[in-house]
Length: 254
Image (cartoon, rainbow, N blue to C red; front, side):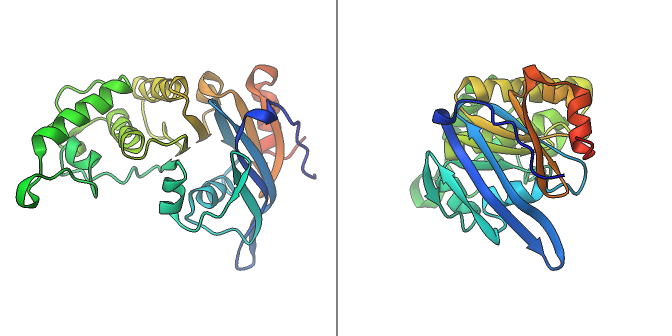
């Protein structure tokens, strides 16, 4: 099929660029010569059927996997992302499907996990953590009835909001990678997550969004890159494409 890519967008505004990424797991070639650009202040949808290479590419960008070949650039400068902490230091946060939250703990404790605010003798400054948690969530227009609620008692959409709020508050990222953030959520909960994605873009945070839900993609994404069998099948502006065209790319028809 070949890598047919319609280069769209303002290249001068390129925030992240992935060039010629190749990744193999034993005898399985997961990614082959994958290239894409993420522009400043946009939502880029990463589409493809199961096994297309979406999650592998996200893990390469986030430092969870090392590419066998290829380069990554941030603001035009080549970077080597050796692990997830390196990605965080470079301003790249990842929110996976499992969210990595501690269900038996409350919201402030989850928000500050590993970076707790302490006072004398190393005791937790719970009051300040609660105040800063409230401020962080309000900044993203996230509304929760009680910050002392255990995370396991929150709805799916609320848990996603906490995970995203934690990523934004602690790391102040310029890029957030999201893997199926609305998977398993009902319509109302999904809409809350989509509104949060729009709010992040309004706050000049760029997002790479993996999603199988094309309705959600058309609602929040500016562009889409489609993967098929580990290669780039195409790239489209959302305003200049259709559901049918994207599905055909995902199936390798065009």
